[in-house]
Length: 150
Image (cartoon, rainbow, N blue to C red):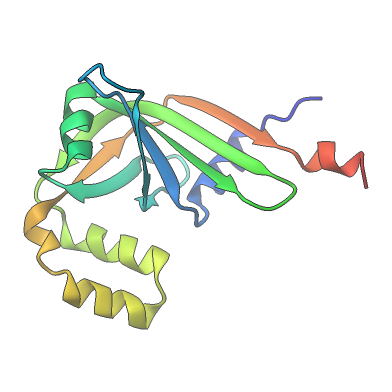
């Protein structure tokens, strides 16, 4: 049974609201890749956008590796996931205010997003935005598989 999603389905799933888990090579050679949960932005056919502090470990590793992976999932049955990997194609430094606002409004209701943005306005001077061009996709949609057991 083929569990892979179509290109349209995988891009739509990635564009939906999920917390992503970013994976990037740890150049210290002491451990597995760095894996961290992140807010991200994506529109079908576009780039994956990830905001982080300019001085963070994540930013250092992303700059060094020049590429990263992002995995998102549906945590209830029937399970689905999309994992995408690709090169960093741009870094916005400083973080554009419109992108910061878009990410906050993607993950928070309007009132909470406004409060979050106001309380964290220092991020405009501390954060940067990484752009990744999707190159490799891995997907699974267990809906058809689960239907066999219903």
